[in-house]
Picture 1 (spheres, rainbow, N blue to C red):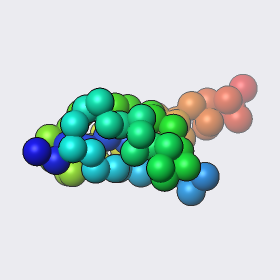
Picture 2: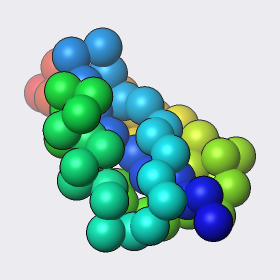
Picture 3: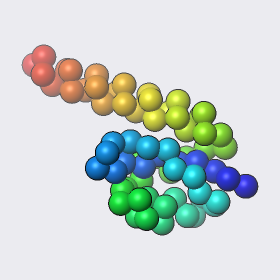
Length: 68
């Protein structure tokens, strides 16, 4: 069964496919990144929605810091 997780690479956040939850770290390393949210998510859409929420939260935090 294919699962999904969220990783971060030099290009930013990304959804990655894994066969088992224990492979998330290996998948991140193969893609030159680190695990941000191991999930596991059952669908790409669920992982993508969570990734977008993480990006919104990060943008809000940056905005709050700039406003101080």
